[in-house]
Image 1 (spheres, rainbow, N blue to C red):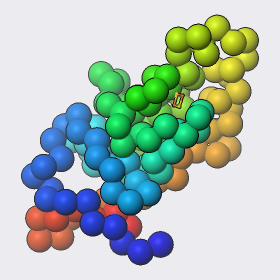
Image 2: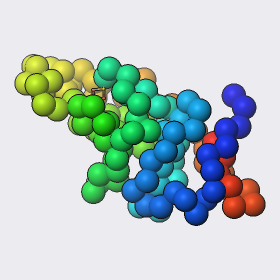
Image 3: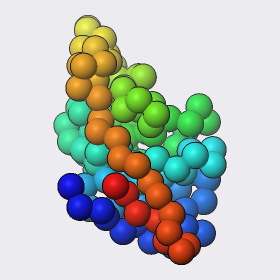
Image 4: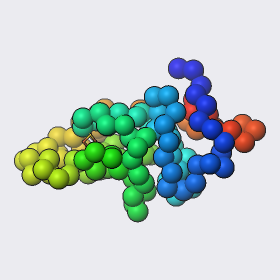
Length: 115
Ligand code: FES
């Protein structure tokens, strides 16, 4: 896949998440990450998510959480979905085998790119 430009490195502060092509790119406690943008639950755009206190990326729709270092779901969808028996287990297991894709964020001349 071709390299995707994200934007100025100084614009991605801790806690920020932005979209860049197929990637959700963010800053989790000073660590830059890029993961594929579609939530494994119902494909919400993870670029609209937020970073939780534990450094995980939280989906904007039903608040499933993803470990941005592994791409795995650490907590399943919440709200009414949390009451569905086995759903949390199903998605956490699914992403064990099919995690979010992870890209490499690089900085060149003050601009971030995902490779
Ligand atoms: S679409 Fe992400 S948790 Fe439902």
